[in-house]
Image (cartoon, rainbow, N blue to C red; front, side, top):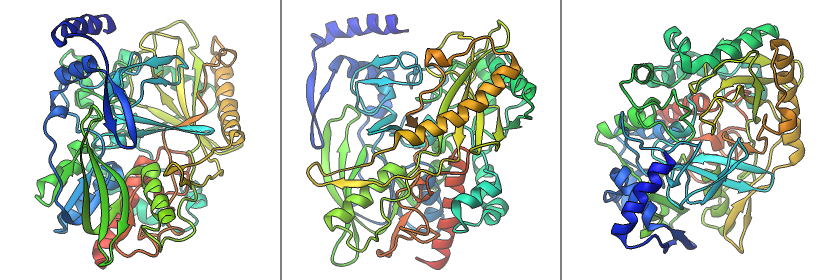
Length: 542
């Protein structure tokens, strides 16, 4: 694929008159763009280069972000008759059964990453590529890299589809009664499952060749005395079946997930909540609009400054928008950055001392153990199952594909999610007008050790042929794909997300979660709490 891309690029280079670089303005500074690659991206995905719509100068409500919490908010506001504008910095990517809309993380190009030129993933092999407005933002802090989405649909574009309800006793230990588990269990978890058509991997897909690693994973954990639990998934199994039947370009069966599924195999938010919101006529979605700051004017309206960006990074315009109510759904990092900056600069002076607190990694770790006998493992992406271990630090291990390596490796991978109590605080650097945090290495070491101990137990009982630990292959421990906290419910905001000190300002996303969703992937819980909170806000009228 890379050779064909290079050959195609060479032909375009002749038409373009060279392969040099150009400088484009991007916010606070300049970055290097490659016109050859940009021409390729435009040829491959012309839809994201179409003229971008402009949001109204004033809206009843503005929703910042378009991930799980934001999408839920936009739909329910629209259904209640509240006109709202959804602002998303990333592009609105299409789907197609045969085109490669998204890149793979084996040989990624700029479509994969938000304005950076290299990435080192769980394979620990650095990958270079051209600067572009791709779908995954890798934000680097001392001690931790944070993977977060930059696309319409947010995290639903770049996750592996597992949407799991946490055990009640662990949930209650994290949320301490601020959010009722019984209420979520009775009303809001089922509501989200129905909206997203969640289901476990069906037997015919599970027994197909690309999911050999899932079957091996289950066999090994059973040998170690665990009974795997089936995972609910957002994947559309009919599209996966089409791949297996040769009726669609392979994606979910060919190691594609972290950077998007081109054929729409994931039933992402563009196919449900966001589409339904637009269908009401009350909600507009505006890609390419990066929110730089928020504040409040003397009349009580909220003020939002935005930069309109082309996918190449070129600044197209800057504007100031206003709204009566402002809903923050930019993800843990995005929402926390906006609030911490607004507090530090005096733009929102009523924010309390808890803004910026309670951030955690959800205890993420990646692990790999080898197969028990020489066999093919396959590249099926949807996670079939998980186990819970509470012998030490409570944790789940989830069956995972091996990301970034589109060949047989003899490995079966796991995503570990541990109940790590460590929390960090976002701080503001006035010299750079930047918000950041530091994550302690000791915390990540403890999470890795807890997950590795369980994985080694399974490897020994399941007869794994190779120990990957000496090779450094079994964990890329210093990253999280599940950042949570920074504006925690019950601290910076009330239990329904109303930010203290500023009526009409709400936190609707992972920033409201206290650093952990109790050993499981956060998406289901974020969406369920957003459903709960927006219902309460609409019912109360505030």
